[in-house]
Image 1 (cartoon, rainbow, N blue to C red):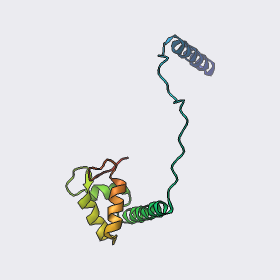
Image 2: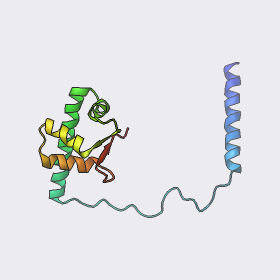
Image 3: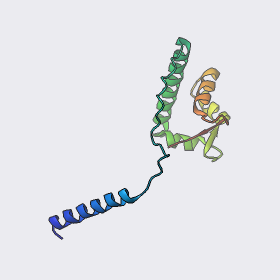
Image 4: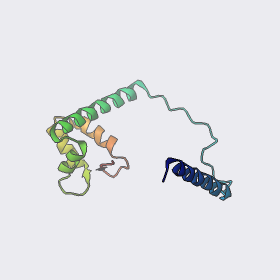
Length: 126
């Protein structure tokens, strides 16, 4: 098949696809984009900003240490998941943090940050 014939077939498919889309009826009540204005983010107090910075620094430090030892965060997670439950409970995670010399306050902050749904379990998402 020549390049011109291939281009002609592609153009024909594009026209057919466009015709198909025109014939479909989409419900008018379905909105993809909200018309409501976007609310500005709440400004953090100085204390909240410092806490956020502290947590971020702790998390970066832990991630770097785990990468040095295990190569990737995923490999570290799989190694640290001692009961093979696919999640780290708060106890497993705090044990690791103590091995890396994080204090209890830092451990609590990191568990709170990583526990997205409040069930005291940390899932590896990615």
